[in-house]
Amino acid sequence: MVERRVTVGWAEGLHARPASIFVRAASAAGVPVTVRKGEGNAVNAASMLGVLGLGAEGGEEIVLASEADGAQEALDRLAKLVSEGLEELPETV
Image (cartoon, rainbow, N blue to C red; front, side, top):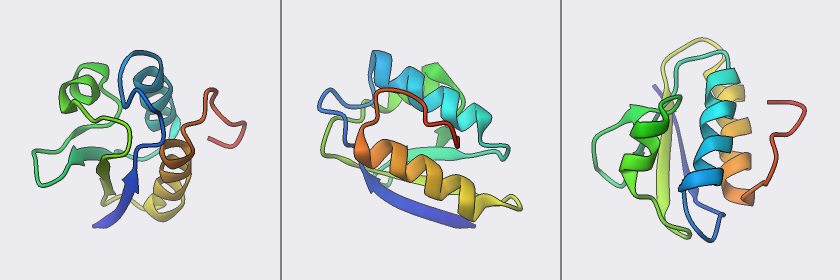
């Protein structure tokens, strides 16, 4: 299991537009990824309802995880997206 702990860089947290950007990136990652807040239950990172249900606010830590081959690179890209609070998907997602 590969994990990345990352602080949410979007001021509004993983809500609405930022959640949509994150979910699209997770869907495009090419590996199944889960996300959880703190020690809470993990949800599918490609699920809009799951991600919104986390209630992750800006400045809070989330944990990205995957067991798939290629998880290191995929989680690195997603962690960068979340920590920097990017407003658009980068070309390399």
